[in-house]
Image (cartoon, rainbow, N blue to C red):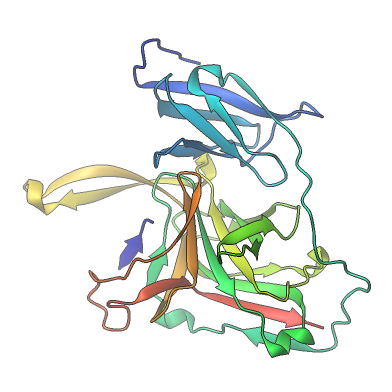
Length: 295
């Protein structure tokens, strides 16, 4: 099975555990699930429910703070004891005049759970994987998102991820968020079909398509430890750390996947050449998702 991984303050730029808390500039309340990166590096963490975070880096680095509904912010690592983020209004371009009727629906992207054995995972840094859905003729009469089914695999029973929806930029990359709410999705232990009801959000799909994205959270609820063996080091056993969940993928001849890490969106050009599976070999990996849309 293959996984794809796309203040103790010390002076003098010495690696240290830097601690801080993220708060709302208006309410003063802590902000949970803020993803925090070391600028231009694949090192990051996520704030916990109480807004606190701990990150291993040096005082001369710059940290990037990113959360839905708040303006991103860059702060030097020696100034992070208390970080304040400003609310950012999300421009919703689709104006919904009437609520969905819900008397007709279509399904896009059905899949067979038993045939999925390759996954996206985040490793130990915040990570977003987004799948593009083009606008189709059927969507003209079924333009509201009703539900989403995604295949997840977790070692723990209290894991969670954030589900996000993005518009499409002119260059084809993910753009602005389609909705202003954080959709935090709880995950059950094991290999499961995780269903998310979207009716209450009244998400109307844009006519130039949209992205559905999974955002991983580097929080304690998602953290698990495991042991692995390095054969090239005399078959020694080592302790490892990863973060739930893993999200199922399907093989594809073309890529419609974008990933967000180190603070930037990048189109995925990775082909799975190392696998022994003939179905997945030398194919792009796409998030496996079943979308139900209604009128």
